[in-house]
Image (tube, rainbow, N blue to C red; front, side, top):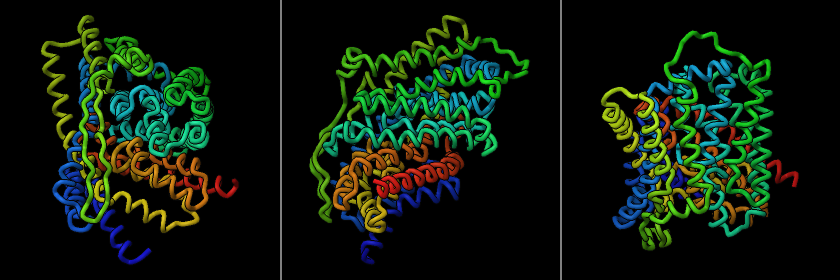
Length: 515
């Protein structure tokens, strides 16, 4: 690489470096660090990458539209949490699960790995972390661990979760069929399944707890990875994440009865609410989300109204072209946020009919939702908007191009890192696949690598990026009282995300050498 390109690459990396340094080393909140990253991206884009006022304006409009997709989830997830928590249900769930199994590793496996992945399968977009984190707090885990565990645990299911939205994006931008892409994608994600389970346990109890829970992880992981592979390669990839995690849930019921894990808590703490009533809101969520996503007639009915805008072609002063097209569409009534809203309303009515609420519960629920939602929303908008500036003036592409140039013949080793980078920037594996899918495909073809393998590494890295994406971490922190204190969570998840991505990179290059 030339000296000029290296300098250009450093400038392109500066907004990301700003966010990482401020959140990890200075303990800045996600909203403050995101604003700082946005400012650095804006100045760098204008001075180095040829951004002009029109480019900046359109990129920010797209960023706001994309943010609304995420915020729809965040606010309704917060609403559902407060609807449940105000009844005392979170405490009741904690007591009930401890009676079912007092083994902490099994609690992490069931909630942080399997149930979080199930929610990714039926909803996605931050729901797994937002819903599971407060449940783990109710079980006695610290808020930092409660957010980190589902962030790590659900990542393997992102590509084929949300009805395969990320995989659909990969097929769309590359023009390749599922039959070509699915085998390698499902294989690498299958490896990630076990690693996410192992490290979800490790973040709480270290290697001693991993050793204790290894039998459960191997059995359940085999069920989930195997089911996902079978569904993906058979053409039912839209059900890959959902079906795999459902298989995991069923398997975990049997595994939890193993003598080594069948520990009941001697706690004498009693709850005024039964476990099944406490869990009823989540049963309602599963039912509504499943119907809204999996029943074609219901999905079509709810998807009739969509909010979207058409954007013109934009060319930077340096000649970088952003093609004309529509921004991120918001499915008003069929969105994951809408499904959460329906679940919140119905759950509130059910709980109120049973007399679980105190007077003025509605006011308290709304106040708590707004208090948590506002700072989180500011962080999300700033993060996404500075990512859109970088995308529209070649900064993200420059980062990926520099990585591919630097590593040459061992490019497969770093291909998942490019996917990770895209997800870190945008908070979405889908967006990562859109931004970097073609770049990875062209690089693979020019270097003589299997495009299917390199693209599998891309989407696997993008899926793993969910555990370190500030946008996703902000979602989880908002539900456990950590708004403004996201740095420790990012510090906890970052090392696991980097380790797992590194392992996937090693597997990818070994597959190239063997093949």
